[in-house]
Length: 88
Ligand SMILES: [Zn+2]
Image (cartoon, rainbow, N blue to C red; front, side, top):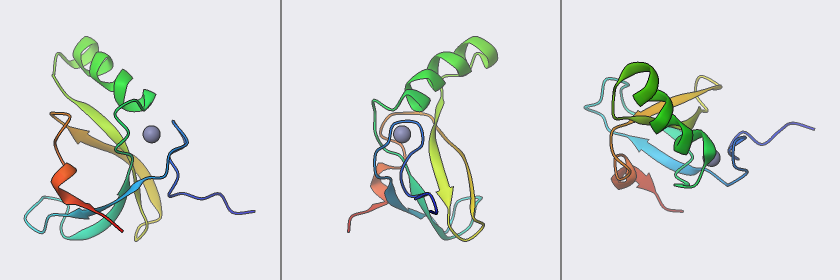
């Protein structure tokens, strides 16, 4: 059975469709991003980045269906990126 990559492996929640802004450095595309503020990946990211990099940021789990790859999406505030969520 193929695993559902649109479900966050860190918290088990369905990820949101995310329209990458055309002006961003990633170029215009569509991702799935975990916008669960209780997701441990995201929650731990704040501590991790502050402890290791002294940077106030975190990251959310991201799945890029075009490239078929997963990775972190950096965020600098809890609200960052939420305006780009595509509600279904
Ligand atoms: Zn998650």
